[in-house]
Image 1 (cartoon, rainbow, N blue to C red):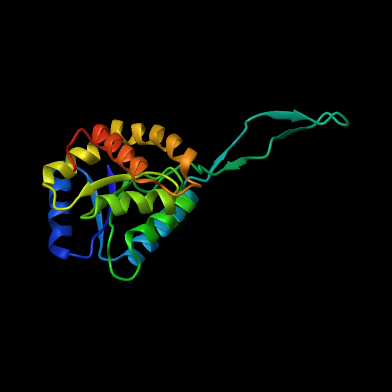
Image 2: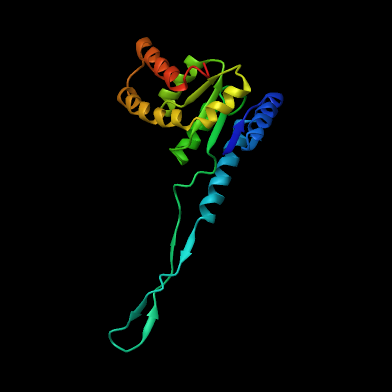
Length: 198
C-alpha cells in the first residue's frame, strides 16, 4: 500500500515508517499538516495528469459526399477515481495546520480517501470528525503498538464498514450530537475495529 503520514514527532514517525516498510508498504513521512496537504495535492495532480490516456478509435469513417475514408480522432480521458495514497495517517493535534484541517482539504478534493487519525483524544476526535468532516473516519488512540498500526492499515474491511456507518452519520450531521449518539458511534467503531485500536 502507498501510505502518507503527517506526524510532527520525528521519532514516532520513524517508528511508523520502519514498521510499515517491514510489511512491504511504501511510506512517505511529512512533519506537519501543511507539507502533508501540499504533497497530497501535488501527487494527486500528477497522478491525474499521468492517467490521461489517448486511444485511437481505429475506426474508418466514410465521407458520404466522396469515396474517401478518414480515421476517427483520438479520445482522451482522465481517471478521476485515482487516489495518490491508499491510506493517509494524520496526527490529530499538530501545530499550525492540524490533522482535522488537513483531512477537510483532502476530502474536499477526493471524498473517498481513507484517512486514519492518530489521537490521544478519541472522543473529541470522533465528535470533530462528525461535525467538521460530516463523516466518521478511522481512529487509533495514542499510544498504540506498531502491530496495531499495521493491522489497522491492512484491515480494509473496517474501512468498508465505516463507509456503511457514515450513512447513519448523514442522518444526524445537521444536529448537535448527544452523549448517547456519541457513545453509540464509539460502540460501533469499537466493534468495527475489533478492539484493536482503542
